Image 1 (cartoon, rainbow, N blue to C red):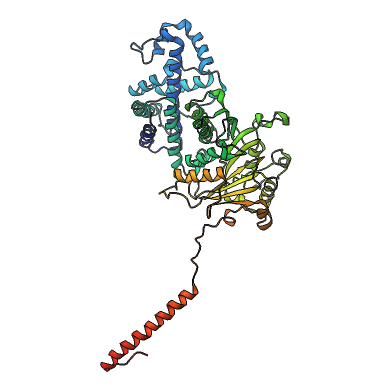
Image 2 (cartoon, rainbow, N blue to C red; image 1 turned 45 degrees about the horizontal axis):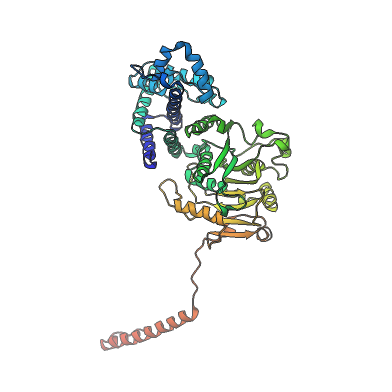
Length: 536
């Protein structure tokens, strides 16, 4: 399917969403629509696997909604063995009545038990699957919510309407896993656009994801040599819907590289479920990723709390777009936490550096970390200055990239990207001021491909360019600027004033003065002839 067709599918589904949600909050409707899109994917995948396993035994529907309905009816004694096999093969099971084909047909016929069938289907997939990836996957989808209708019949009718329209919209397009995955991403972006500040909880705009992804997939020690061939693991400790992680995977694959496993952490349960669905919708096996629901700052993920330093998990790449200037409450013992002990605690008013230090702790010596943060981390004093000083003295800050304002749905403030490495060759810091390179939009500003490519190329080849980028020595940062990383201190975007040639100006003024005197004398002649008072 072409990229144009994929975008068209996304637009068709978004138009349906806009029409169907009525008075319902966009965030609430998002969860219903994306879950139904996900059920369609699971069903297609499951039926394809079933057809492969049953081979010649896979029947034609022959009056049934799906071939599996007929097979189940004709082979009741083999159902358990078949489902056990499918748990091993696909890691989940869907009963014939719960497959999308049957659900869509029930919606078309306005069947009165659609709601109950959906509830049973979601519960079965969550509880009867082989992999823990599916546990609680639909936990935030409240099919009994009064937002769908006051009575059971009203809610059932609303679900029939929604699913019938989605099924009709999908019927016009190929729905392989890549297509559905891209449609899912498109819808997440559209819902984010309408979510205001809440969008920051689950979505990093693709244009910014592309920059971070390109940076961490380039060779850490020598970015100019190109993209890495393989990464064992990547981590996003504030992963939202997982789009940033998927972007890293996509960039690596496009350059012929491979990736071992993807790891993400997310504290919001609804967004956590979106992330798991997003991974599966993009064709990832549950063994290829691990998304954990928990609080990053409290570090409640057992895998990351390994006490033995030799067994501590470390990652080739770390990317993150954590909540900006998040207020947190570090406990009394947090100062001794291994993540913060050598740098100090971020202030309660802004956890930006707490997030950064958490991720940096788990970065491999040869890895790259790229994190989006507010500009305040570059120059604020107090505890943040101490952390910044330690990172600079140890040579861990590689690049500071200033982005234009109003790129995010959740905030209009300009932000920066900090690139950190535990081992880096250059003994300077690269500053990139991309704040004035963008396309102005009605709601959000946009980074066009040329803007993105310029940022990435400047980072990759560490170029100096007047009014755009500059390599600054640590000595200059420390001795002249007292560890202040404010980009405007090193790169000015002000237009230089034209030099004034005083001799030329004086000559021109003298010439003008002579012309004025001559013209006045000529004018006074006429006035005198007319008997009028002359000019002084």
